[in-house]
Amino acid sequence: MTRMIRTAACTSVALSMFAVGTPATQRLSIVDLGMGSVASDINNRGQIVGSRFVWENGVVTELPPLPGEGAASAIAINDLGQIVGNSGENAVLWDRGTVILLVSAHRFDHPCAANAINNRGQILGSCNGVPFLWEDGRLTLLPRLPDGDYALTNGLNDFGQGVGGSLTETDEEFHAVLWHRGEVIDLGIVAGGSSSNAFAINNRGHIVGTSRDASDALQAVLWQNGTIATLETLPGARSTFARAINERGQIVGHSEQGPLLWEGGSLIELGGLQNGDAGFATGINDRGEIVGSVGPSRTSLRAVLWTNRPQG
Picture 1 (tube, rainbow, N blue to C red):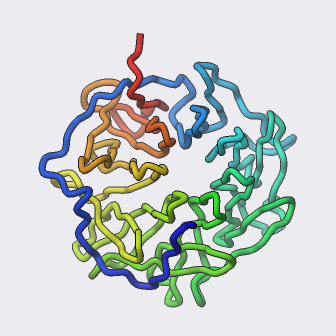
Picture 2: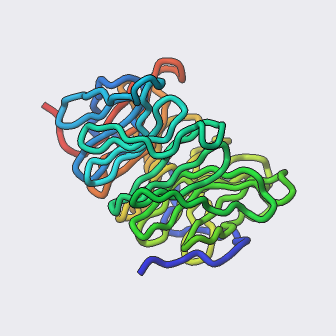
Picture 3: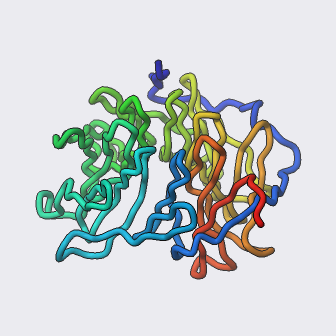
């Protein structure tokens, strides 16, 4: 069974499994996917989505938008190859090449997006700060923190547990949250901190995200067993994000210096297509294949895949 996070305000603790001395640079094989600047997610079949494209076995396919609506934007993909995202300002699903409207922007009079999909076909999304779960053609609105009027949705596991963030009752702080069986649970912040956000959850109930600490730096964090732990950061980093976690407990993310991997007691700098590249790591599958974006600047990024498989 998935372990449920029960605490509303967690205590910052040291995480020995990620305590490292000097961060390592691991030059994994890296592939330019040729699908623009964004790779957002990868499934266990190696299919990759980002921007308006899907990549599989070296072939890039453009996803169709809704008729008469704006361009497609793919955000997440499950192991069945079902893709979610948005077309224009509408939340959509792509299933076997067909685009399906989930939630129209006209329903809420604001933009909508589908941000996560699990292997049961459940979909997590939001419309102008209103979180929702879509399942079997039914739309269920999810609660926000008491008296908070805005929430973001980010990740969903196969048990239907979703994560994201919600404004608190004062509307002055944003806290990471877990949605479980229709309830919203405040995951809390690091000691002395002021805000947090959760980006992903695996089937063991382990959650990764970020929390602003007492020095106003953004720290990558892991929630497990009712506690919140800060992950190791690079020297001098002020903004470190943990964006995805797989079933093996490998975590990927990024800081100002570039894409990162936390694995087996080490913090690893993934590197880019050339020396000096910055960028992001945004998705990882259970084989340890990682996707993200790298480039010499934030305005000249390329979608990439990191893998242990040798090239050539």
